[in-house]
Image (cartoon, rainbow, N blue to C red):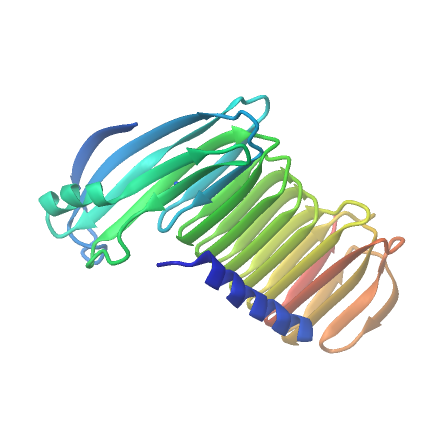
Length: 289
């Protein structure tokens, strides 16, 4: 079973190394064509929940396999969660029966709304996928955990955090802190206003970020490239380091610059914040806009 705690521990190790350098509907049986995807038949059942927001201020989603999509809605008074549970197996009857073993559980407290996938640890060769679509108040925080699949957050005005083993992480139009721990996959940040901490083992990071003043941006990768776009008037101390690769800085005015084959350091604007970029195997590109 995927463990967010273990993943976080692993990511912290990698970061340290770089510092040193969740109402059911109709059931549908469909034939599928991929012979390696758990079997030749699938069973699909939809789910839908709506929870009063009350005093909750955070949404937490604990998935296992499948896509996670969270969108903030200004003025919303409920959290809406819907999607589909899918089982792929070697017979239609087995796929349909095994759906009873796969649950989506939603609970609410004063602190948060929690949605999570519940399934047996050993699926005996079946493929189980649970895809989530979520709409929450735009002012809520969001925390996402997943073993495999796309994780996307859009239009929130608070902190968002991801712990993902394998998949893509996408963040659009967020005003707030972004915290990402990803083992295998790529990260895309677009139109983010806030501090950012991103740790990736294998994959690329492509980020367009506006830092608060003062603000911090820390991106660490083991195998992959980092591309960071910043406003030209960013105020921060800048440091970029590579072990095997190259560094380029374009359209940013940097003062007190020191460069070597593996590092670039300098001051952007008044130097109020901090930007730290590091990759072991890959390139770093910082660009002003």
